[in-house]
Image (tube, rainbow, N blue to C red; front, side, top):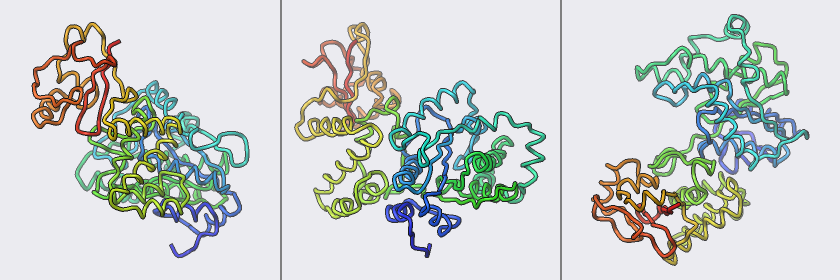
Length: 420
């Protein structure tokens, strides 16, 4: 990329590390300087929450609007989710019912209001759903009008298909159609809303470029652009957004604000500067100051990263409450009742809850077998006392003066059991 950005939008994305590829950097930069970028990102509704793997594209939409470069379009995949994107998958996605897709769609919508302003203004965001046009398609007409522009030879070279076939893993016909539908989305958005840019993760590059080509073939008059962001891994090579206990969800119903804060607090030292650029709105001079901290002081930078990143998704109050809970728990050794809490029936506690089952119920382990192995390794604690007996039973006698039982996995994961 030899062109130096003139627009604040692309200058910001470049400086903060958001850009992986663009189809025409200079052309997109010109649109941005004129405030004429109309860009969309698609989000399939495969779960009731997005996860932090989606945050890069959401942040790009945020910077698009904040810098006045144009209009963000958030596209819910109410239609494409019925098919399933094969990108980055080793096996066919499970087909979901329309009712489940609609419920997921309604649930994931809530996160966008934290990052974007929606409305009728020139740069206000719009939320759309591709089921509006995809669900109405006539298959024969679609094949004649759209399918004829696609080369199967070329489709087989795209990573979403090629990687699956190279590994001799099945690629279903329904998945093979996904790139046609994603390309057609771009055409519909270009026609309906003047959309001129599609953005997404680098694994979507092939699908996005095919959309550019389809737009030209189907008579879209204005230039179309592509921009992708990198698929992040941590410094140790782990996929961003995944932990041993599962995805790092953005909705609080799937992951409490405290646990979200803890994820960022546990960032590897080598990732702090990069994540401050990508996942906070801190000015770059402040990012540089924090990135320069070394030794024990890097922990202060991690706490600021955790609080700022959490504030974007869960609000400033919950972010600061999470930071204070962590301070009390780890620095003062005090029990904070703001820790994640799981309720159990009073009758169950009176009858006795097996210690293995208690840790599974708390979500600290996935199975009794895992709890047993953790106990054997000294990894579980009850009220800050190491658990040693896998046959132990928790009862009302184990309640603290605060009326709870504190369960811990290692030094940083704590859940309170509370009878109700």
